[in-house]
Length: 93
Image 1 (tube, helix red, strand yellow):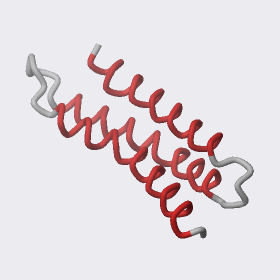
Image 2 (cartoon, helix red, strand yellow; image 1 turned 90 degrees about the horizontal axis):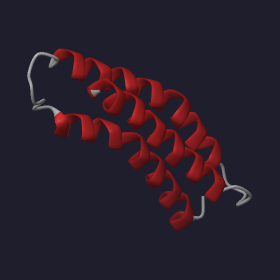
Image 3 (cartoon, rainbow, N blue to C red; image 1 turned 180 degrees about the vertical axis):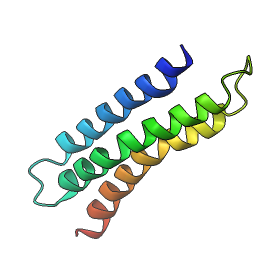
């Protein structure tokens, strides 16, 4: 169950957030959608692998003390995509 939530659900949420960023910036004349897509192509599998390894390293403990680490790793991709969107909208790049 930990693998399903820590890897599968996180990957689905990241794909959904990436899709929302791509749809929100479509037709704006900038390359935010392309940047978000390229970040997602690399970021989602890397995040899934890192989360899998973090969960696998603590598989014997009944309560994983690395939940905060999983959350921080999982929020890196959406934060980078949101930062790209904000930078482009603020600085009109």
